[in-house]
Length: 204
Image 1 (spheres, rainbow, N blue to C red):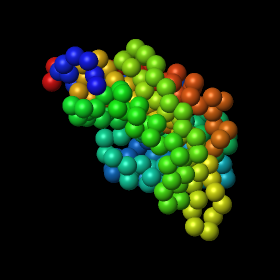
Image 2: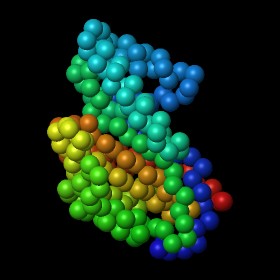
Image 3: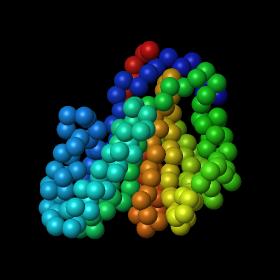
């Protein structure tokens, strides 16, 4: 449980992503042109450009099925590969009276060994760390995906919640690597980005 009365809401939130992260356009009026526009701005042409355009379109379709409160960005550290290295989904989550850092940590740790159709959590590591915006509570997930008739693929992910003091809301960040080589150290690198989060609180 959070100590002290919660009487604040998050009026504004920002994360200091590096220049090789790009916001994903999900607006109906402009989204269809965004993949090709971004690939062009990155100076790509030919097959590499088409590869990235296709990849960005897939990201858009995936994120459209996610909760509408999520803000999404893609990490493209080396555009010449035509690949997206990682996807970030960031959103605000309303907290119930009995929810806080401790219960969030418990829910993240509970994924250890979890299995459901086509999905197995092979490794879960959890931690807590203070950051400027509040207490960060995170988990590293190594997840095996087995689709019918296809080879097993392994996904790296970090899920990190930030709890500003006395806030009725938390900031949740989900970083999904697109290959096991995307990050040198996914925990350290994604926590470095989470540490840049700034929130503006107001009474609510």
